[in-house]
Length: 426
Image (tube, rainbow, N blue to C red; front, side, top):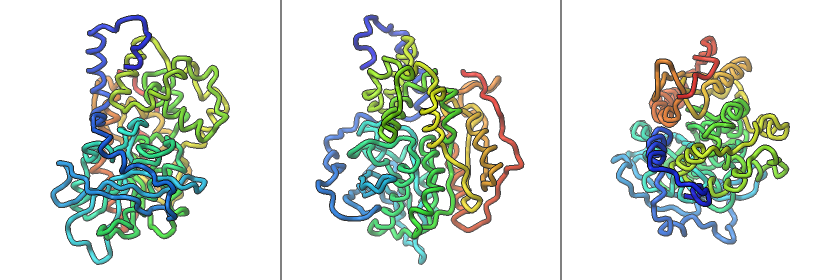
């Protein structure tokens, strides 16, 4: 591993064993980095020159054979056109799952999935893994309800150019254009009605889509956005995690995308020498291996950040700009959060709930109990973060069904957040 090179000491087998065990609690599900990428690399190449077209146009498609596709559906890998917030054309990969049953007269509604952090390497893109269905175990219910499910990789993840990690305006466009792609897909019979569901980074993307979607794609009808453990309030998240192990996993990706969007972002005195030396290769490492490397760095006393970036006014302004903003009452939103999430801290989404409700958002907040780790007393658990994405699926789909059926959205803002402070770390 990269972090072992030049260290000058041998990390003992006992520490490695602990790291491997702990990794299982962080990752929950393995991102398949062992897939032979050479077999599919040509599929993801951006045509040069990129032919004229518009966002949502399909560049390539192929059948995606994997054992976990529901029997009553077909799945395809897709390369489609998108664009950044400045209108610059970009290309993104995705996968799409389409019911085999005859489409209803009005066409099929679309549920757009926005995935969480995977790492920035090509092999980390969900559509480039062997079985991306394992990140959406609720897909059977969506197919049974007759929805088309589309899942963007985000532009730059597995395709040419940088991934704009936690840059809301860009990622929201990738999500919206995946819906346009679904409508262009032969045989999908996708209509203009769509909802968005995302987890973690994808929760951030989903909530941003609530702002971007209606104006950016007025021909579509966005009925609601759901977010499980969304990385929405970036300032309290960084405040709580900048000197923790999670900074080694998230920090490199943030540094790459934020410096791409904000070239004058300072690093002196904020990112350590070790962080600056290794952030590019760490960002390329898929989440499973990145968690292992982060734990080894932590065991060796290395930190990614030298100081809290939120103490720097430039960093703080960027974090504020990329945090999700309260949605207008006309855009229903759902937030699902566990009380002992060790990655997206529960206190950050207590702030989100309070802020959005005061602003008049039509927000339903569902607080889940501890999903992993110690429950008495409640302690933070990284594994809970991964399990939140899975446990939230049935709740989000039930809520989205109501939005698709034009049932009135109801907020629960009269109920306060489940907690205000973080429980202690496990």
